[in-house]
Amino acid sequence: MAEDYGRGVAFVDGAYVPVDEARIPLLDWGFLRSDANQDTISAWKGTYFRLDDHLDRFMRNIAKLRMVCPHDRDALKAILDRCLSLTGFRDAYIQIIMTRGRPPIGVRDPRRCENKFYAFCIPYMWLAPEEQRERGLHLIVSEIRRVPPESVDPTLKHYHWLDFEMGLFEAYDRGGDTVALTDGDGNVAEGPGFNVFAIKDGILTTPERGVLDGMTRNTVFALCAETNLDYRTAPLSVAALHDADEAFLSTTAGGLIPVTTVDGRPIGDGAPGPVTRRLGALYWSKREAGWLATPVDYNAVDSQKLRITT
Ligand code: PLP
Image (cartoon, rainbow, N blue to C red):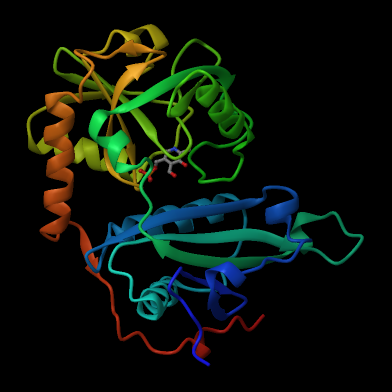
């Protein structure tokens, strides 16, 4: 019987499986130690966005973690194409993941682990539902401190998310839709799956340190350059965010998402701001016109030759 990939597909140990059946071994340190790095890529209308940049970031990050990916870039692209072909998704949310893997039983030396590559592809996932995106998100700033950059390099795309998860509980308890964490100095850092931008007097500010160099954040910089908007990476105090004319979140899961209240206080007039709307619309119209796009190969061949051989 043909496999059912209608809800998504995963690539595990060289084989494609329906995403609900995908399993990783219990003893993989990606699970036991959060010893992992991922990259999240989107496809929209049958094209990947900034695929090369995502693969660059992924390869750079796993090198920092001293992991070895068993696939080269061409093979990674072929795996993604195959995932998209099997599901037929035109709009997709894709993660590529390296974990430390597991060492022989009884060994605690990370150098003895066999690193593992996984991927999955599900329908395109938005950071927030449409109704929230339309009215703008209610953002809560938590005093929970994001894992400090001195402890874990924030430019890795890692799974150290307990701070975010507990922040989300706090945000929901306080009537918010999502949460941004701070850096311990009263400045905003980032949130679960997004970077934060504030706009004041026509200038965009996004935190400079302690955050992921988000692909969408970089894309916003490019859109600013194209539309002659000033932007800067600088510390963003919580007070400055409260006092902003506009605010938005940037993420692969939706582009630019307006924020209309922070800690219950309206931002600007409490509706998504004009600059946010303009840049957000430009982001999607340029993507749909093929900007930085790589077409998905929906005729991607079977993966047997890509089997992990180690
Ligand atoms: N910051 C964190 C912690 C994230 O997990 C993400 C995305 O998942 C982002 C920022 C936004 O990054 P990108 O624009 O590459 O999706």
